[in-house]
Length: 114
Picture 1 (cartoon, rainbow, N blue to C red):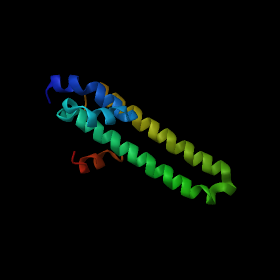
Picture 2 (spheres, rainbow, N blue to C red):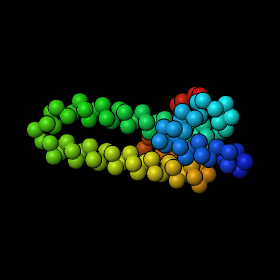
Picture 3 (cartoon, rainbow, N blue to C red):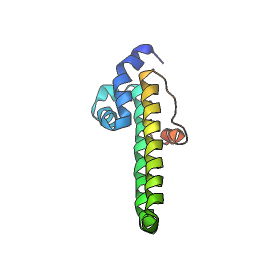
Picture 4 (cartoon, rainbow, N blue to C red):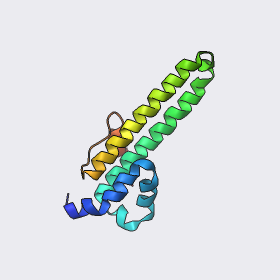
């Protein structure tokens, strides 16, 4: 990939892991043509969807875990730390100009066709 393309899309790519970059990607026509920004927007979108799914599952499981509140908080804390680690890994990858998939869920980004 051309280094000019990477440099042009680097900020959008890095911000894709905190939702701002995903919005930027869909609004800016220049970013839609940038393959580097597109890759990281897809990775950020996969991460966002995974976070929402896990959050919903934890809310559904919250009632049965209410009697074991410490276990519920521990599971929630571990999930949030895992997502934070994935955000940091994606951000570092984007800042370094690399197209590196997120562990465990990154391969799902190839399913998106935008």
